[in-house]
Every structure is written in C-alpha cells, then in structure tokens.
Length: 108
Image (cartoon, rainbow, N blue to C red; front, side, top):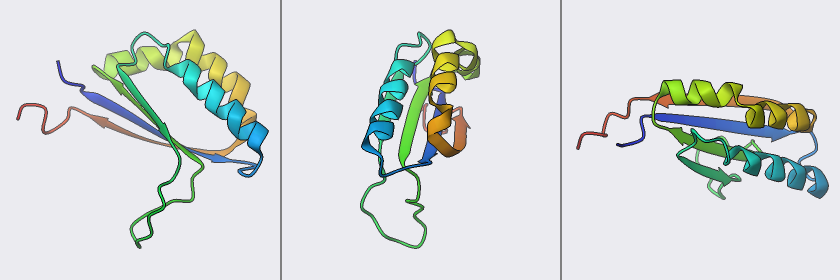
C-alpha cells in the first residue's frame, strides 16, 4: 500500500550554531523513528540552493510518512513523540508543519 500521509516538520533552532544543541535535537528526532506507525523518515538540513522561491532559513527538516491520517494521529499521542517534545522544545525557536494527505500520484 502506498504512503498516504506525509508529515513535514521544519525546525528553527534558538542557537543554530551550538553544536551540542544541534546534536541533542538530532538525537531526539531519531527517537521518533521508533514510533510504530512511522513508515519512513528523512532528516536533513537546508540544501545549498539559492532561488527566490526557496526558504532555507530553517535549521532542520523532518519528513515522516504514514499509511493514513489515523496513523499520524496515533503518532501525535505516542509516548515517544510526547517525550521528544518535552525533552527538545527548549531547543527550538519555531516549528512549522506542512502535512499532505492522499497522494495524487499513488495510483499511477
């Protein structure tokens, strides 16, 4: 079954040049990959691209895929996710989420 729900999270760190804080966030994010409803995951930093349509002001991008909205909703309440927020929220200045449901090309 193709992935039907994409959860994109962008993090802006309070101290983006602090190596220890960056590593702490990376470690925290990696714990999210253990949530049972997560199908696939990607963690990255802004690419070195420069065009007017690109926003590369964020520190990290996390993309998680789920089979459906219900699985993503389960993830939101999972103790691993809740612990991540409790442990790491002090590290970020801003978080922006973009969710996408029911991929239009799933039935190619």
